[in-house]
Image (tube, rainbow, N blue to C red; front, side):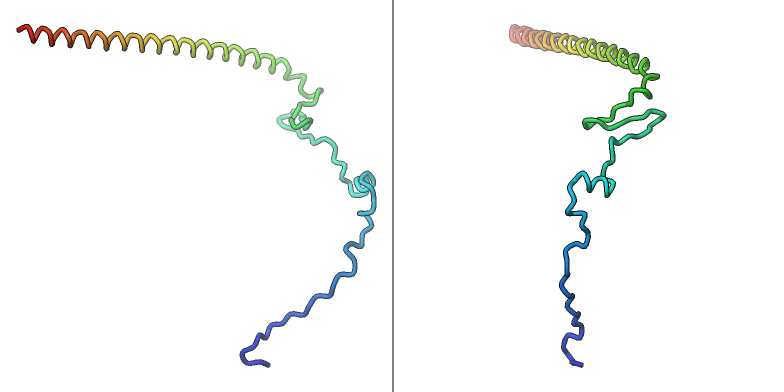
Length: 126
């Protein structure tokens, strides 16, 4: 028993005999999917009574479950279109009002400048 030496010396692990004892890595892909159950199919979910499926990177409503809300969807699209048109009209009105305000402000500044010039001229005459 060493006084100042390292008392902890783990044993070396023996080398592995084989990388894998399973022969599944030798099978082709389709057989592996069948054997291991890797064929998941299209992801689906049920949300608020609607069945949705994931296709081409987007969640799409299944044809049978969404037909009841088709009218509601059309109504919402129409309402959205109306609101977008109203929003565009209001933006146009705001732009016009800002133009009118800037024009009036410019005219006001010109009038104030002319008034100051007239005041200075009248003071010089006196």
